[in-house]
Image (cartoon, rainbow, N blue to C red; front, side, top):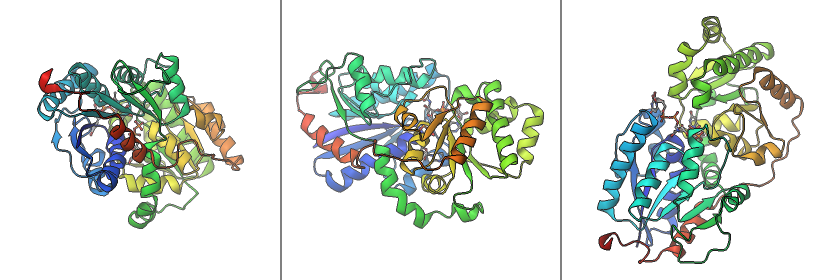
Length: 391
Ligand code: UD1
Ligand code: UDP
């Protein structure tokens, strides 16, 4: 039996981990066991617990309850807690997802005590090191043993950073292997799409007309914490919704909700609160989110995951960031980078209102990334790869 320790902490990681957990329980339960560590990075009911219930995954084996804090404080507490778990559990591999502080903490803790790291969503780059996520991605990739990249671009990024394309087993931290596996979130979107249609009543609850409203998410620190950027984004949303008489649905991340009043100009804040076209909500569950995405007209977001889901569900996307790791969707003409520039947001909105004959060729795999990853973990496993007892 191969023993995995999986690290989750932030909302998107719980969602991604659901795909692998489902695959293990269905097809690999006799070969792979999973011990799940929740760092506690996200802890509100609607940022964490809600996903375990509805995605049909077991609750974590341990929650380190690290909570919020500065990068250093949060990451340090996670490293300490994860190291203790690894020393007790002695897994064959540690799995981390994406690019959050929980990802980095897992990678640092494991690699230093010779537990091979599996990075799912490896190789993505924004080429903007002012993003904490870019630092987390690069550092995690460079101590990983098995690197699973969702896109060809991700693989190429790794090769250009010195990863070899032709390594042979046994794979180790010094002889890592890069796999092109497709996107594990695509697995989830396919799997939960019909379940969501059956179970979610969010469209009725919010009295939305399908294909008529715009879905917006905002949570990047450079947007929420910078008043100039936040004002520019909300001015654009406020103006478009009034001018077009279109409903905008905004399930707001707690970070954004907390900073809205503090960082928006008083008049704009008042106008937003009183704007009947803006529906500002707390975060929604994944099934509700999928239904909101599938029925929207346009998606406006700074989220990595939501950008991709816009593509999965064939919706035009306006990206509130200066660049994206998912450059394929921009090159495909179905997403536009508008950054936090009010005029660019207006232009992109107007473009997508007029141009709706968009094509979405398959670029995120076949929806079986989790199955592929399990197969490769089994092939790569070797009892001698990790022997914590003798280290
Ligand atoms: C983190 C990730 C980001 C990811 C996002 C997913 C890092 C550096 N950032 O950003 O890459 O896109 O998660 O959502 O790891 N808060 C709550 N309740 C919660 C969680 C957070 O109120 O359950 C508030 C706290 O005020 C906290 C703030 O949100 O200080 C930021 O949370 P944090 O986890 O540090 O970063 P995110 O912005 O969520
Ligand atoms: N999501 C959700 N409810 C929300 C907002 C987002 O379930 O209110 C889901 C979304 O569908 C996607 C994931 O959370 O699968 C993206 O997470 P987030 O935007 O927080 O982080 P990122 O992907 O940018 O790291």
